[in-house]
Image (cartoon, rainbow, N blue to C red; front, side, top):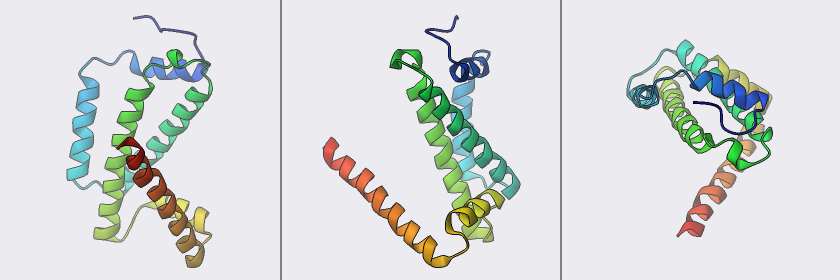
Length: 146
């Protein structure tokens, strides 16, 4: 099947990655993500998956910034759904690692050090800000939908 619409480098890269996949691979990916939520994974594998998730997020951002019309990137809603499910599975895994082993892995530790600069007060303030933003986005968004 030919690539629909104009070609930007980021969309072309995504197209080359997904074109040879058979139709059942996305379904197997979703099943694998659901299994990842139930089965504990080693810390090194969670670090690798977090790195891949961040890379894919940046690739999607670049792809979205490179399009001129929404018709150029018709797969975006599906990719957004799959990446959200993957991030949810990673969130469950990192929470499990923190609560069971008191070790979130090197990716989360490095990001936490970068954001808080090693100060617990800065971390608490940033946590409060993120909590307020999440409340506004989720709770107020649900009111608009209803």
